[in-house]
Length: 170
Image (tube, rainbow, N blue to C red; front, side, top):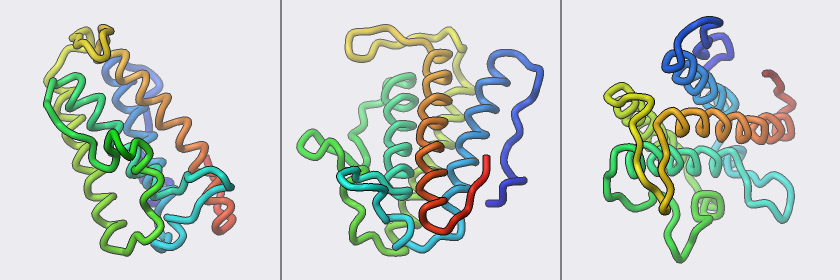
């Protein structure tokens, strides 16, 4: 993906349009930050002792999308994709031997979870709620939280990408 292909959020719009377009902008930014890199580059760690890598971020955000939209908002009974109770950081930790096929699978999984999240969002009211960990959340809160989550990880991705090959950008 090229920078100019990213979703541009509107300057004016209702809550749903602004939240979903900003989230799509950040999703596109992550894909842009990872584009054109080899599996070795995508799995390279940031700075010890951190286990963060671009591939780990993609895997983590696939699980975040699944957790908040499918398990939370939609109430689906699903396990994590890359983590378990016994391996809670598996999304970041288990990338050392990732091949091109593993990378392609991780991106396909992330894109599937993003698409499913869009479908769930389109079918619900922003004020629809669900209970998670004993607390009530609205879809509106989830969208705001995901914009924040992606923005934070895109900052990490920007630093990782610059360290790998000098590429920078918004």
